[in-house]
Image (cartoon, rainbow, N blue to C red; front, side):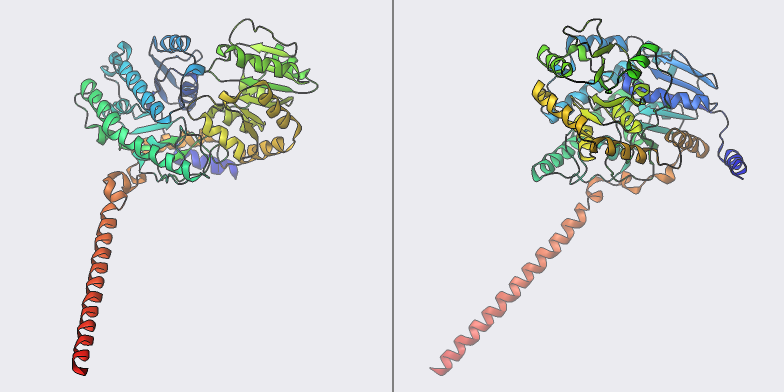
Length: 516
């Protein structure tokens, strides 16, 4: 019976090999991992896939077709910038300035993409595509590829729902309980936090309307002279694939064309390298896994911060597996093993791993939830503070802000996490929520991409909010109208009372005169 239903599902919903373009130009491994996972899965399903990216696929899928349009030089440029200024040296204390600099950086990256030799050669070819998938990351001009190839547009939000996605899809995001992605707030905000969050929401919209969108509109006119206006492009997204889930993100509203696929990049554990397997197997007291992700290099830690880790780790009975990008770690304790690159998902799957020290990136947070491991988050930038707060609020970990990182504070946090069993219990519970789904998230993503292809777009999923001017969406005209009516009625009531009072006073005067 199950086989018959599965075969019927295949007959109804299968899409014959389609031509799919993926656009993932950000030279950050964490962003590419998500784009690559989706595009590889589509190719393995039998589709003809082309991917614009800075990394290139070393082992392309064997099923279907897979082609890279390589943005040569992007990765090297990002590496050079990291050498010149590490993430530890960047000032992210002012979120308003941080947001502005992020938009400027991505604007520059977008034009470098549009002006790249391989990109221009590609768009001048006579290729035809059934759908275009673009990473949603403040790079609006790249969405002009959809009308250029006369194909529906899908976007992939690698950091979940955020101010940029919500604006373009008409998704409600009340600042009273939905924190901005670059703020470190939870849904339960204080008055001060709600004030800052509201100001940040307004600032983001103003920045988009008066800076980001006009600048990207200029890029569209320059590189796609026959394209429609930018507004007609960016508000015409068929669906948005959202890298979030109730187990990893706090619950927020979603309009129908926003599809949650959080955790779609996670794969079942693979065999570990021999030396790592032996190190983990031989850890009688367990292992702490320490990694600050692919963008942040722990080898660039300032000496005082690095020493805080070294002194703390040297006192532990547990072993420590540390992603360290250099050959040598000065003062390395005997219980610490280093690795320039480590298979994170497979390590977290090992039963002897008792704790994960992470920067709190969304991918790392998702992977630790998948495997049910407690966390100590040390957020540095971006959405990491928001993720760290979610980890703490959901009870499966603690956080320690980088600026507060000392041997004393680190030791205190680790001792609490290792000695209190509630964190491990909550991590396992969170993992159960992650896995309790009708369909695997990668299958959900494939289904909806094919859905858009089958229907030639999905305008029936869009809410009317995206076509409303701001004053209608916020009911500003209605509020003004009702306010005027109320003021008028109050004014008339006041006048009536005044007239009645005057008549009463006049009547009293007449009676007094009469009596005299």
